[in-house]
Image 1: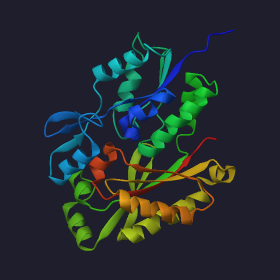
Image 2: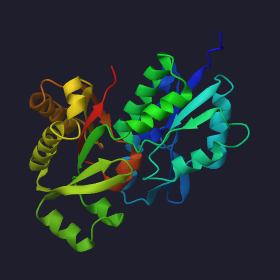
Image 3: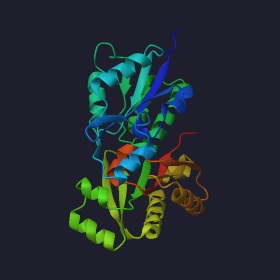
Image 4: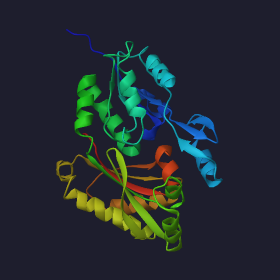
Amino acid sequence: MADVKKIAITTDSSSAMVGADFEHLGVKVLPMPFCVDGEIQLENVTLMHDDFYALLKNNADVSTSQPSVGDLMDFWTDVLKEYDEIVHIPLSSGLSRTCDTARIFSKEKEFDGKVQVVDNGRVSIMLKEAVLTAVKLRDEGKSASEIKEYLEQTADNFSCYIAVDTMKYLKKGGRVTPGAAAIGTLLNIKPVLVVGTDKLGKLGVAKGMKKAKETMIATIKADLNGKLKPLYEAGNLALSVAHTNNLEDAKIFAEEVKVAFPDIPFKYIDELSMVISCHTGPGVLAIVACECVK
């Protein structure tokens, strides 16, 4: 009888996962770095969410970065002291070079054949669901390569829409012009963004957050008759709400989502990872419909 390999599931904090909360599942989380006024800070280690939003409010120079090669290799080396193999599920390659870097260095002699790097184009709650799916598949006896194959084949099994409260940070990142941001602020226009595999795009705009929430719910309903229909009919879909420093409004939105979709399980009210928040700012509300493997 072949030896059963002990497999760790690893990700980074762009999944909105905090390592200590998931250690019991054999999940390890690599903190994402941010450059704050020229200094590197690590998400949920030296840079906590409350501090992050305070920095944004005070117009600090905050930008995203990627884990250094040394930190990544040290992370894997430590995990392999306890496990035989790793399934590493990082931030989408379309949003960062993090995944490409991981794929390159997984071929180094000490990791080759031991680390499977998954690029399923996800971030935040969608990435978190991929990690939890990987845990379930591992516990069912799937190999590391089989887990990687499944996650990449089902990468697009989600819908996510984000309503942005202020255009200030979209303007800072060059996603809207200063003129459009000024007019949008004057007219209380809320951009609604769509998160897809490997991209963050524009769905439309709404006048006020109430209308933006209605737009997101209506779009999810349309998806239930489109791209999400097979998952919906199979009962393999769950809903969640996310926010950026906006928990009370997120709780209200969650109740509205439950009423709009009474036959779909509701899972989380999560804070979006700082990787997204850095570009959208505080006050965001988001809805996620994602495959939830039974």
